[in-house]
Image 1 (tube, rainbow, N blue to C red):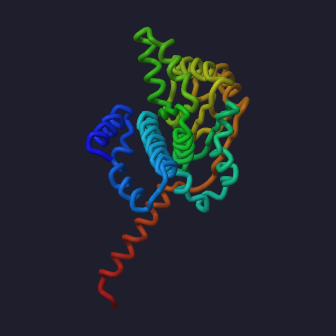
Image 2 (image 1 turned 60 degrees about the vertical axis):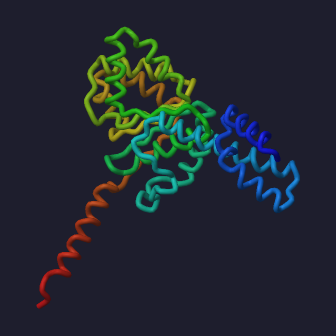
Image 3 (image 1 turned 60 degrees about the horizontal axis):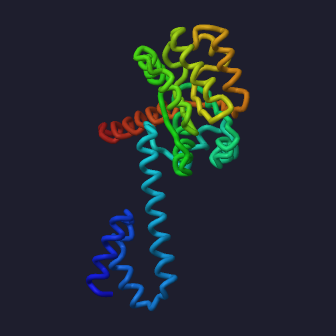
Length: 263
């Protein structure tokens, strides 16, 4: 291939933003010539690699925009430490059928049992499948809604939050919520109801949600919409953080024992 044609090819690839093809072009053309590959095989490989690269970049961009505090996968979750969790149920949720059916998920359990890990893992899978996804801590969400209300842009904020195919609301019940916050939270849940999916995590049982939302009527209305089409995962087990702390202390004690003079 002449230098002029190669220059034109690189220019066209740059214009088409085919960055991966630009990176692999020279080495792959040398390989294609040496292995006497036909034009269909060459095009098939180049476009396949370009498509993979674009999917990877799109996923990384989606994850970056989603705001997940941790980026742990389901493969990293220690199901053996939490036997109360049905692994098959979680794997079924990972198929994303709940998104197609516009269903919700609620992870309940005490602090440290893996609720955020599981919720974030499902969110990352949704992002990988190119579903618009957003993570937010419940307290931060209420502060965002209050700020939007104060600035007379609440409808726009609710519209944005209602468009995400998957919204992960973490740590419901960890901090108190006043009546205004509860009302704003209800408005968001009502806008998303039966249109898109939401994943919730909470350290409070449903019977305690009256306390979270400061009003039994609002709490009932929220629960009615959350649980109508919903999978509830109730985690009963030890805290991972306490486990890690215990293991650290045991390791520290073993080190100390090796340094002590032997009698």
